[in-house]
Every structure is written in structure tokens, then in C-alpha cells.
Length: 277
Image (tube, rainbow, N blue to C red; front, side, top):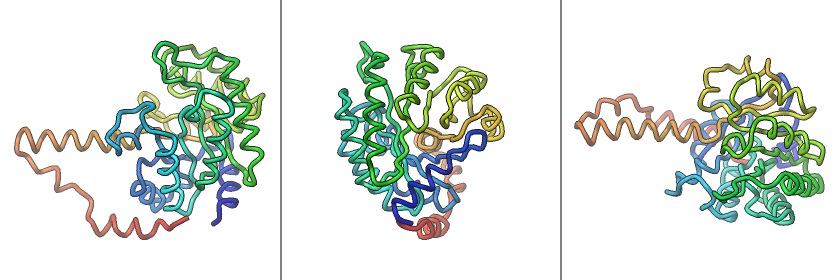
């Protein structure tokens, strides 16, 4: 499947009320395993990738590092890959547009762009600049030769810089300036998710992490979501396992948990079956 076909397929997967799972992978191996298990599309995760590089979540991974990683993932699997590109690695709209163009060049068929500044003193862009950044990103996406999917993220609820009402206002504005889907991570309740879905006419992504893990795919469908992403949850679950087993082993000399590991043969089979892009 070439990039154009992957892009078309990825766009078609976004059906409000009938969500697909965007399986977030933190490295090439996890992407290939998820593809072998039947994932319809892969999302990268900025936090998960940072962990693999020995860095904390945040803005310490450069744009070039992230794009190189995204290219590796996109080449490794024969399904669509969408990139978590943080704030586009630029404050100015032109820089964000350039990031979109580069994303398509490395084989991505979509990406998320958030309204976070990574500045503790002012963690979210002001409304007008946040909207202008998405306008420019959408124009860049629409000018590409493939059906590139831009998801605009309103991250203020998650990072505590604004409330649900402001998140909805921003998502509505992002739709107006051309975003193809929107995303407000860590809304307080599933009713808030339903409100967001009802407030826009484009697909809405929901992050299945934290309290939202108690809900099912059917619950998210009823709320009107079109896409369910995992963020860094799989990566953090992997680290949870390492912590638990590591403490048992290093603190108590207990190795019993290692008996539950999957066989090398099973992993090899899945890595071979996932296919290259």
C-alpha cells in the first residue's frame, strides 16, 4: 500500500459514532507488533518515544529526532501512521506549516498539532495565535498531494491552563479554519466528551487513559467519538511492568514474574508478519 492509499484509508477510518483505535507505539518494534495484532493504524507518541531515548516527556526531543523516528515507524508497517508532533516544534504559524510538509515527506498520513507552548509561565498559546497556527497548518495539509489528516489538539484542560468551555471554543474554531479532526485530552467526564462531539461536525479523538480506561469502545461510540487513541499509555504500562519486576528482582531476589514473558519465537513471528510500508 503506497502513502496515498494509506492516507485515503486513514481519513476514511474517521467515522463519528463508530470509532477506530489509533494504536500508539513508542518504537518500531511495538508498532510492528500492534500491526501484526490487527491495528488499523498506528500513532506515534511523543512521551513514549522520549522514554525510549532516555528523556522525560516534554520538548527535549527535537523536530528532526521526532521526524526521523516517525519515518522509521512509517517504513516498518504497511498501515497508516499518524504522528504526535507536539506543537509543531515552532511558535510561529509558518514553522508549524513547515512541520506538516516535512511530516508528509517522511511518510506520515496525518498528525496532531497541539496548542501547548511548553513554557511553564504561559503553557497555552493565546486563542488567536492558537487558531492561526491551525489555519496555517490546515492550509499546508490541504496543499499536499495526499489526503493528509490534521488533528488539532486543545490541551489546556489536560495541563490546567483553561477549562472545558474554552477547549470546546477552541475546537470549534479549529474546525472553522480547516482542521480535519479535533482532540481535547483528559476531559473530566464522558459527558464532556459527548458535549465536544456534539459541538463540532468533524471527527473527535478521545484519549483512553486514566479514568477513561473504565469505558469501552461502545461507550466512546455512544458519546460520538470517531477515534480512540492511547497516548503514552502502552509505553507507561510497559514501564510499570519493568518497575514491578525490577523491584521484585533487585529488592527481593524474586524472579518468578519472568516466567510470564512471551516467547522469543512468538515475538519473532509477529515482527515478521507485520510487513513494511
